Amino acid sequence: MAPSPVVRAVVEALVRIRRSTGVSLAFAGTVEPDAGLRLSHFDGSTVGALHRVLVDVGQGLGGRVVEVGRPMVVDDYRRTPTITHRYDAIIASEGLRAMAATPVVVAQKPVAVLYAALRTADPIGDRTKDCLADAARTVEQRIVAARTRVSGGEESSEAAALRDRIGDAYAQLRILARSLDDPRAAGAITRISESLIDEVPAHTESDLTAREVDVLALAAIGHGNAHIADLLGVRTDTVKGYMKDAMRKLHAHTRLEAVVLARRLGVLP
Image (tube, rainbow, N blue to C red; front, side, top):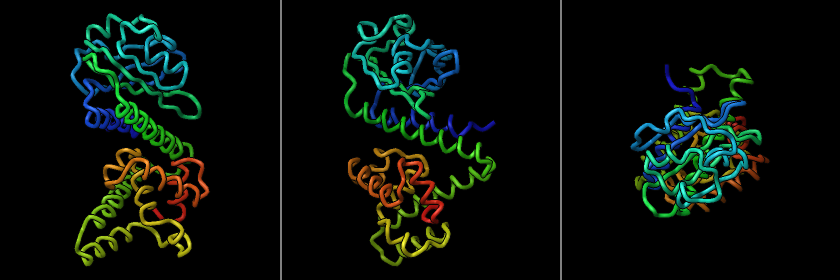
């Protein structure tokens, strides 16, 4: 059976965290109602001690993150006074030291936690913290989108998967067109990408700049700000600015709402 969109988003987030930061291990757990945080997904070498561990709310680093609903960082897991030490033996068997954890929050409730851990005494840097936060926002967006599809009954899983592939192709074609020096080839690729969307009212198309549409297109397929910045060759703050302007023009309060409204207007496939 193929993994759900949410599981796929978590797995992709862990791969991106390790590739972007070089941490020893990236892993994640999902919150089980009335139970705790079940550690279930890993990227990096592990002896298996963490697999399927159920972390009680309030205990250890992940349980504390679920309890307070905000990111936390420890420079040395087994020596820090900011968390309880119920799981020290498991952490010791994995040889983990510095660790950061960020909650995935949906409807004001933590539903998962993403971790990044080192087996050295090096502290967790700002790049890793930012990457974790960015990955968490991406997973949040995927979860909300998946729940919206199920509750609204708008799409079958096959239709949703097809739309995701079309959206991915649309975003990649836009990036490819901008990377070409040949205007004729770029124009041809742009026309192909435009054939994937409905006809757009003139005033809507002129309100959003090309870069704002690029950012929305990449956000629509689950990319966070840092990854979008890498793909477009700009700074993360620049991407945030484009997204903020697009949200203002679309009268959206969140990234997901901006994507939904852009699709409704025919700006995105």
